[in-house]
Length: 274
Ligand SMILES: O=C(O)C(=O)C[C@H](O)C(=O)CO
Ligand SMILES: [Zn+2]
Image 1 (spheres, rainbow, N blue to C red):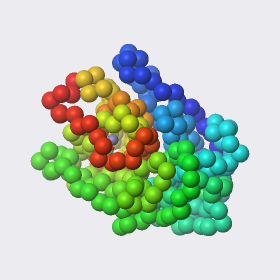
Image 2: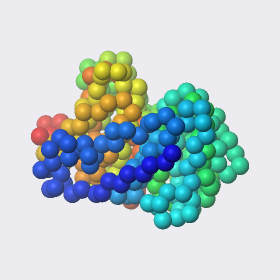
Image 3: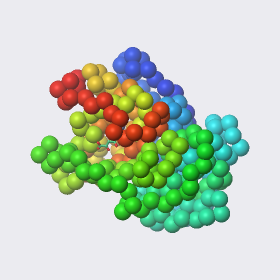
Image 4: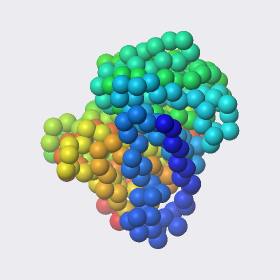
């Protein structure tokens, strides 16, 4: 079963007036990982599509999606797939890859239908593409690691970059994940913006009963979303994106937009946040 929901771009002035329900409706994907289903959200921010595929022992095929206006999903798109569950298989273009938890797969434009199988919980992030880059499986040890923050400021974390210009190449997708070190709760603090690229954060490995407070909004007009395990916060280009967990968690970040420079960020000083 395939379901696709659309969310439209919201400007910062409108977002300022949103109550909790409207913030969640517009910026949080609450239910993407459901057994036996593919659930996608078509965001009108850089036309990034995010979602989940949970085959739970059956085969799930991602092919035609009305919202893209193409015969096949990958006709004019590329996709990054991160497995956040048990071992599963992804097949496309006559090839198959076995993905353990933490493995990521890049599939380029024109690969045809994608089949998900096994015990995986597959996070899907897709952006429009103009050419084909090779399909590549990226194990965590292949990704570029950057360690940031410190224990004293509760933001000690390792950023694992998987799909990016110096690693596995893509047309516009940049994707990886960030792991907090023991006792640290803050991601992306100090916060930043990049009006040139939108971003989405999938929070996972959040224990039952725990939550991540995800901060969004313009730096002087912040709001928060209370995020549970396997929910996706969609960050408009004008918004900060940063979170603090009540327990440990990991998150997968994905960006699309005008440039592919990870370090192109406008940093926001903590004392300027409101
Ligand atoms: O913890 C962090 O800092 C991040 O993971 C930052 C994200 O990768 C990001 O927002 C990149 O623009
Ligand atoms: Zn960012």
